[in-house]
Image (cartoon, one colour):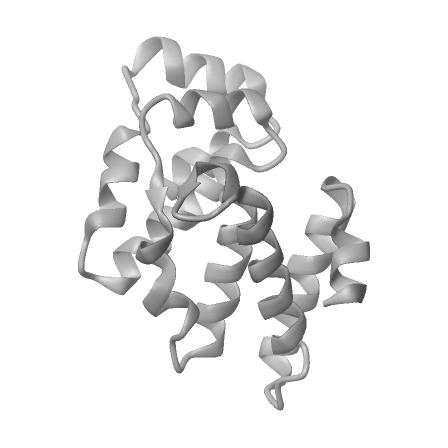
Length: 151
């Protein structure tokens, strides 16, 4: 799913071929959020995030298949591994309109606050990852720079 997501990112012709010829559905990826395996949920979130990144039409298509429970991110966001926390926070922001259990704005703010907090990590790799995520979000979503400053 991650590979397919990357193949269609910013390539509408590839996305059209995927939708027309393969019978591909996002539903199995959404169902992976019910897994008890943290890595599976993290990869499912990554795949969905890439599919809908900067693509409101794809977001609506995926939303029609189902939603993700905020609780499915709980252990990812509180992981001892800061890389997992950062990826989960980024996914929380991208997937906020697919998440139930809180308003999408609250979900996004929570993700932004966590990314900003992780920028203070003693681990350089965490700082780099979080600043990359915030930079990426700032380029494509209004209000992210302001929210990051206020966090």
